Image (cartoon, rainbow, N blue to C red; front, side, top):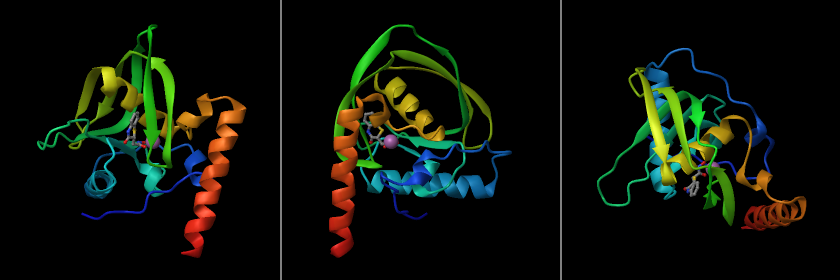
Length: 171
Ligand code: GNR
Ligand code: NI
């Protein structure tokens, strides 16, 4: 159990394509525990392994609002079906701090994955769950939500983040 440092844009690591996990063992479970700690510590609702520098196809999520935690673990997730109807949701990202934008994505999707115990599962997601799982699966491909914005909007955000980084470097 440990809180890790979340990598922020601009950083080439975030652009890596994550590799499939061969099996869910102790090492992967330890990683999922650390990812969940890191996600809760940062008040996020999802986290992909690459955000803490590990290029493995592993995601943790918890979209529950109340105190009762409902962690979800996704290893090697694959979208097997998506709704042609799109839904717009305001997105943020722990790797793109303090920036938000409305992003269109399929409103529903079906995802196949392995759970914490390595058991094959299928999930039908809609609403925030669908938005979040698609945002996280983008991380596995090195894609960030700002990639869907116009070149201008994206460059403004990256400039802000670079500035933010150079300021924190002095402190
Ligand atoms: O905490 C997060 N909130 C969020 C809100 C709307 C859409 C996606 C997300 S995911 C984000 C955490 C994160 O960066 N995961 O990769
Ligand atoms: Ni993110």
